[in-house]
Every structure is written in C-alpha cells, then in structure tokens.
Image (cartoon, rainbow, N blue to C red; front, side, top):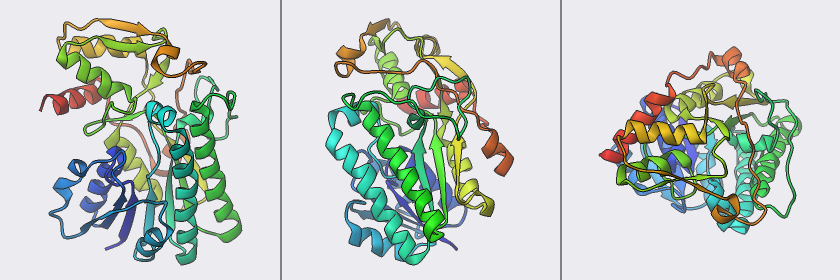
Length: 320
C-alpha cells in the first residue's frame, strides 16, 4: 500500500481525492487547518483504519516535514480558494499560496517524494482564447486588483515546482483545475454553483454578477479526481502541466436559468454590478474553456459527467 499525504484534504476537492485514494488502496494522511475545509467532509473517512487526520497548517514546516517523510506521494491541495475569500483575505491568501507551497516542496525534495500540485485556470488571467492550452500566454490586470494576486501566487507555485524538477529532479506534476463542482462544495467563498442551488431551493433571488454572459465550463469533482490520480501515477507526466476540466461551455446567466428550472424554483435572477459584489475596479473574463487534449493523450482523461448530471447531484446533496 502506498502512503499518500493530502494537504487541504478536508476541503471540497481534497476530501473527494482522499476518499478516492482510499478506494484505490492507498493509506491516506490529511493535513488541514479547517480554515475553509470541514470535519464534516471527512467524518465518513475516519472509520477507515488507513485514514489519518492531522489538524495543522502547511505554514508549519515541522509538521509538513514529518508527514512528508512518512509518505510516498504528496497531493498538495491546500490553498486559499474562492474569489470572495481571496478578496476578503488578501494577505493570508498570498502567504498560504506561496510559503505553504514552498514548505511542501522543500520537504518533498528532502525525501524525494513525488508531488502532485493543484493549480488553477485563474493562471490564464484575461486570456479569452477559444480553448486554453497549457502553453498559452497569461494576461493579468493591475496589481491594485486583489483578484490577480491569486493568479500570481499560483503561477509562483508552478514556477517553483518546475524549478525543483529541473534543478533538483524532484518529481512533480502540475494540475490546472477548471471550475470544479460537486457535493460538499460551499458557496460561502464565492463558488457559483452551490450558491445558485442553495438560493433556488430556498426561493431566494439568484445573484448574477455582471451581465451574466461570462462563459465557463463546470467540471464534476469525481472526474477531476480521477484525472488527478491517473496523472500522478503516470511516470511520463512528471515535469508537465495539465488542464483538467469540462468541455461543455455555459454562460452564468444560462446556468442560473437551468438551476431555477431543475429545482422548480420561484426564484428570480438579480444582476449585481461587480463593484457591489466584490471591490472597486474588479475585473472578470468573458470566456474560460480548457483544451484538455494533453491530459487525454497522456492518460485518456475525458469528463464522464454532463453539466445537467452535475447539477442534479449538487441539488440532491443540498436537498438531503
């Protein structure tokens, strides 16, 4: 049995990843400070003798070093996430996403443990290419806009991971997630699908920021986790970056309409200016659609879950 460390493993994606690793026969240790994660996400895993939870932070190098030394592979999922959380906590977000990752990579290099690094589609910034591929340029806004700080920290994480690979031969795989959704995801930090579903079920207005014409592709968490594990186990993926996401574009306005219809909700749609929703000068991008051809070539990655099926699963989760 291989030993896996999942930082941020009590979070939304991290808890699903931990569950999937256990099913594959891994022993799993989770390190999480519960700042955005939840014990409820991993309560069902605590009964498994192959699972251990450690309350702590990736900012604590000694804790990270100890857990990495016992692991064969590290899935580094711990990060400040969600547009709202990042804008509300700019300093903490910058520190967690840089120093935390540096701690993980330094410890992994000490013991030469493989690292699967969770990154983000925010890396691409305002690049609105029809399909974004891993080598495409990054187009970012001013440093006065808090949102772009997150993209910069995750870019730093990628640069750092690849530098460890090139200079120290530390085996790393970088995974860029595109709008991952599913059960256990909270809308508290700005994630749109759980926020819309919860509002619709309660009969409250669905708050669409901007004009609602923004195009996104929403990915089901199980599909993303499957791609993550497959790439982490593939020897040729080391030193590479991969997009993981859905290829089914939808506008935010259409998403709101679809959720209202699927929940038979009396809710209306309210359009909220960005400056009222976030901060003065907030910038968004019109289109974000991934090119997943590289992940498909390496491990046959292809999302199995349609948008409608994804939404049904999230609706059922909130109803229960």
